[in-house]
Length: 119
Image (cartoon, rainbow, N blue to C red; front, top):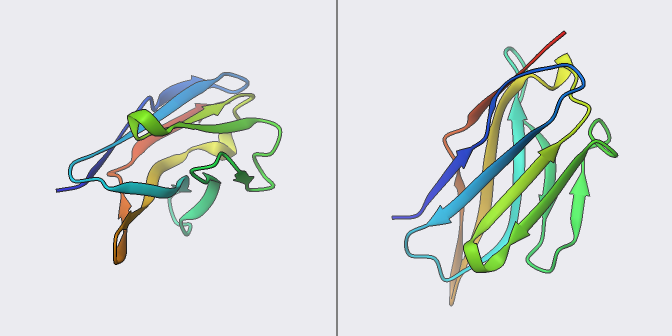
């Protein structure tokens, strides 16, 4: 049973920083793209950043220059360092991963971690 478990969320003042982690475990063959999405109350879930197994990263315009995504393939872990946080970054942050197997692939979500930025 594959699981993605996020950690590192919390309450921080505007201008502060947080580091999110997401560990994938259970029956993993290989992982292609890993990423972070967020969903604020009343809004649709949106992509924050993604990273390929080779390390190529993609960011939403709203977080470029402030957030950094990275991964440790040996640990099946993806990180998101969030600097210069703004109240508008407040949301539930979800980790996702595309898992590859010899003849198929599956997409998984984590359970989410709350990030709250106070003004």
